[in-house]
Image (cartoon, rainbow, N blue to C red; front, side, top):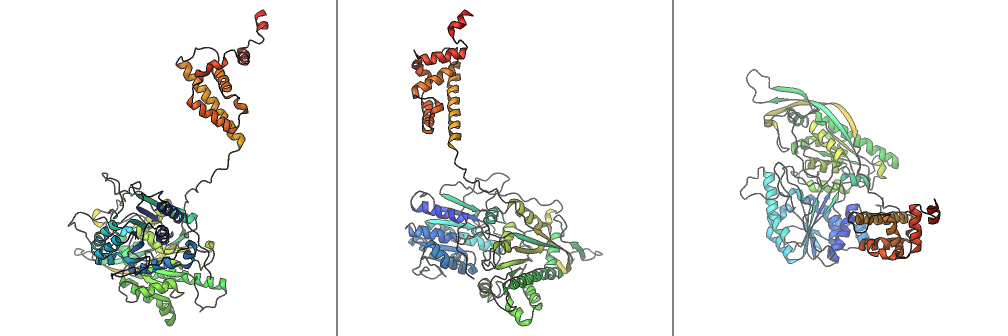
Length: 617
């Protein structure tokens, strides 16, 4: 199937115009560009646009693109190598995925590396940025926390790693000539500031707020509402599955039963049982029930698309739709893999269902096959594929994850909202996300519907339900301590189509005003200006009181300009307004001395016509 001719989205066109202005000196003060693009909105093309414009103009010599994971380096290379975009832009730039070897660009227009690689050899990458005028692309910049005070406790191993990335990236960022920051979210789950971005001065009781008007910074935003309006992403249907869960809880006093539950997942509000119930559900029968719903929905979708194309059952083609399963941990991911394969013939299960976790030696190969080939049709993962995975064929997501931070869920959701060029018309495609119907996910879904996933928004304090005491609040990486999952089951499924309240469309350029309307408007403005001068002059005793001063001033204007406003052309009316702004009519009253026509009209307004007849009365 031939891909359609490419067309730029609004944020991509905005960046192209900005880069052109930077190249010709009109925006020479800009050194930093922040592109806040909703997940799935087309962020990966922005480095190509920026590099093509700035390198062609001689403003920079090379581009260095830093990504958070090794699996994304291939996608970055593909963005520069895409033949349709190369033809559309007329560029011949190539970049390479580099390790920490000397001369990482190898004569090309730049290279792609990871935060981990920079942290391992910061001096190498800093020297490269100093040796060549560099456009540095910092992808998913929210992974980089602004460093705190020296020696501060960074908490978990993941936080420590992110802090090491930031310390290594900072000198590279300082050495770069230009920086392009990319992110689908401008909030960190831990509330910390993001490295390299400007913030407003801290205010008591408020979280960090970006300073979008900082000097030298240009901001380009692209919200989910805009993406939907431009048909850049797909609408979403949520399959919310409620259930019950029971578990064993340690630490009970003598005489208490260690068994807890069954408790409902969809309790309506966050409770002390919410986290243990979710933890149990993702590892017992509920997970199998949710997997079954997602599996059979994918199976029905693929069968329908095969029938629409008259394809035989075994033929491998693109565009039939795929299933992405996001697990809470690697052990659960392996269990899900075996469950899914057990529902299929042995040979087909091994071919169609793959696992991609950091513990798998062939994880990158599985990811590449899932993205680029008709098979496998199902991928089970934990976190490797949730962010940045460009696999438009994903049509169904089984969200069997315990993480409930909004940025994480938005990224996961975006795996299914990409438009698949192989799947037919936009109107025939839709994302389907199955998830536990717990109150935390329900809150996220409500926020997404009401706020439309805006990429730039002020940070809000997140209220915690009064039902949850302080000791039971958790972070996403925490697991409930001292419980043993027993059993769970799904007890209800409801579908909810996310019907976004789209942003008001940008007003169309107004139709040209009719000349008669413009003339009438200008005449009214002239009359108002004359009246205003008359009122001001009478109030200040600039002229003697008595008679109709506005009438006299209208006559003065007519004598000075040589024409009454009723017969003036549009340019003459505009010129008359300009003259009134610079002159006082009171300075030109001598124009009426001995003017018989004005004397006649003045007498007519006083009701003394004809004067002789008025005397005889």
